[in-house]
Image (cartoon, rainbow, N blue to C red; front, top):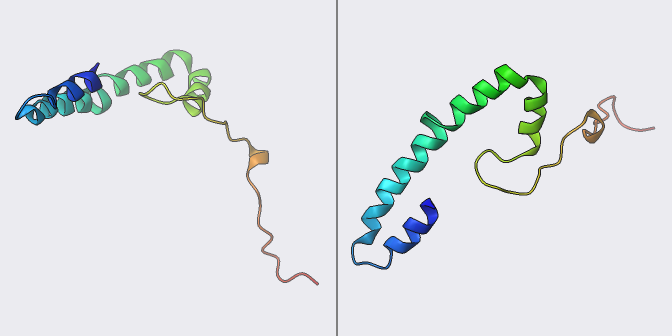
Amino acid sequence: MLIGFAVYSFAFHGGWIALVGQGVTFASIWKITGIPATEAQALRSKGDRYREYQQTMSTFLPLPRKKRRTPSDVTTIDTSGPAA
């Protein structure tokens, strides 16, 4: 909805000023009121299950799932010296 208001504001002369309000609203949801408090509560109530969910899902936008990293995904580098 915020994106829709922002796009609509460009239809008017001086409508870009409406982007300021949209930016303030987005910033307050992103960092101040909404997401941090909600995630802190979810971590308290759901613990590790929610932590796993955070690793696979986007915080704010409905994006495709992220791949979970497992220890087998990490490649090790041989630092023992040159190969013989």
